[in-house]
Image 1 (cartoon, helix red, strand yellow):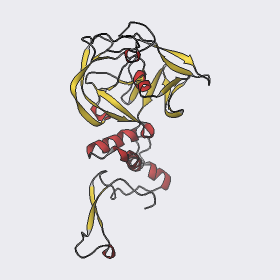
Image 2 (tube, one colour):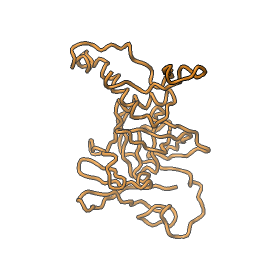
Image 3 (cartoon, rainbow, N blue to C red):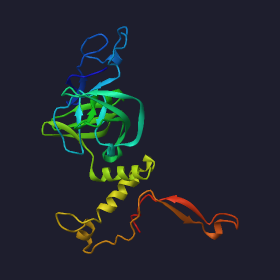
Length: 267
C-alpha cells in the first residue's frame, strides 16, 4: 500500500512551485520517496498491498475534481464520468479520511477540457468527491507545478492542464460540453478518438437550446430568429451514403454504412 500524507513544494527555475513527494515509504520507512522508488531490499508484501488510500480536504461541486497529494489513484463516485469502463479482475480497496473502507470494481478513463484524457480512474460508490491524484500524475511522467492562483500540469515542457485555485484548493473542472460529449460517446459506444467531433456536436446543440436566463437560445440571440431543430440526429447513429452510379459497377452496393459524427460548419 502506498500513501502520501502531505505534499511540499520546491521552487523551479521559473519561480513557480513544483510538487515534491514528502510521504513515507512503506518499504524502508523513510520519508521522501514512494515504495516503488525505494532502493532498499523489498520487504514481503503486507495484507494491505492492494489497498489504496484517499485523503481529501473538502467537498466540491458535482463536476469538480480535487487535486490531491494524498490520493494514490484517480477516483470518482459517478459512473457517468467514465468512458472505456472495464471490470477489475479483483477489487481495489480504498480507505477514506473518515476511516471507511470502500471498494472499486470498475476502472475507466475521463475526458476533461480540451479533450485531455485521464486514464486509470477508479469508480468507487460511496466516495463523496472526485479526486485527481498528484502521485499518479507524476508516475505517468507529468510535472505538477503550483503557482499562487493556479496549478499547471505539463508533459515534456508543454502545458496540458491548467487547474485554477478556488477557495484555497485546486479544482479541475469538466465542462457541460465535455459532459455531453462523454455521454454521447458512451451511450452509442463510439470510439473515443472522435471526442473532438462529440464536443463540436455538443456545442452545436447547446447553441440551439434556450437559456433559463434569457429564454432565448444563443443562436436566436445572435441571428434574431430561432433555429430549426429538424436536422438534429443522434450522435453515433448509423446511416448510409449513396454511391454515385459512375463510381460503381452493376454488382456493387449502392450505398455504404456510415457513422453520424456531427454537423458541418458551412451547411
